Image (cartoon, rainbow, N blue to C red; front, side, top):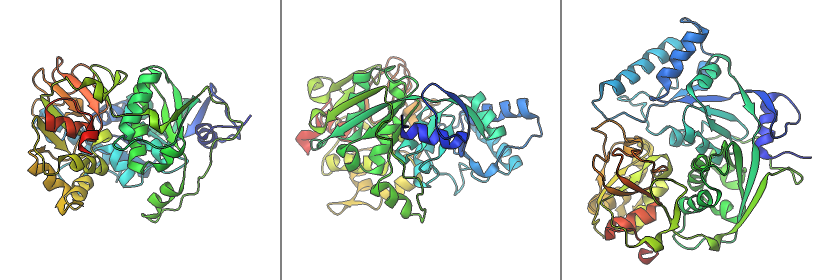
Length: 431
């Protein structure tokens, strides 16, 4: 029997010719990523287990990208940054995106793409569940706990169980206004929040081929909401071009073998998808947006690793141009590069940034911001039991702040359309 893409990557890093689902193997890790929430405890465990004066396995392969609680006066958040400054300086870790300096960037998962940190065929381990975003680059990327990350920090290795793979094939074309966010919300609702537990989800088909790299990032970002270990897309001309732009040559072009074993094969046609929302309090509560047009919205939110990329803001601007929001609306670019991009990209001779401002949208500084709630002074944090529609990835109780807030997940198109009308709205009427 042949191997899937995920199995091939793991086999390459385990130094063996073949692995099969269920095997447990030692793998060499290419990149370890951490941030301000999990970086301090990871470094503390590393020191406890390897020694106070121990050195990390390779300071050039560790990326410390603070992003969660940055623009706040909270003392605990500031202390975490100081811990990371000390640790990276003492360890000689040069890939530290230090807040308050020119090196600060914003959301780690988007930064990993912008800086081409994740490469096809690599293994990238992160202390964040949405590390799986990097599967868009044909990387085996997955999140782990602080103890596992500390072990990687000291050894460059990790013990992995080879996941089974679910193949999701989407052929045909999507309807106008339907996005990767809508696609993944439907897939999660079909699979259930534990339907892909410790499995890889491999995406293929003409719809995936037509997705931009950023849309593939959205797709892979949310596989964890179905319990998946990782999501992955194959290397194609778009991905080759993506790396060519940075002068990087891609040398991994493997695909799943014709006789690879999949635990399930799920087939869709693009025409099956529509604009979706996920109702409180689970990403698995997917429903067509058009069926929920009676739900009034207090607030709209555009941002996060899932919905704060350049193309996400372009989508929102296509709806918001020459219109005014009825619901209070917040927008937070994922990174400083996203912010620069949307201040330069124009639609009908107006920048995306100006379209947001003119529509009455409140803008925040690049970071995770309210996606994970954050301290009380976090920009966009929900401090009241409001009804919110958001481009973020989770809508658990308290996820954006107040435990009684009702969070609906949706695409940038749907969030923008809903903000204009003050209620959940299928964006098709604005497109």
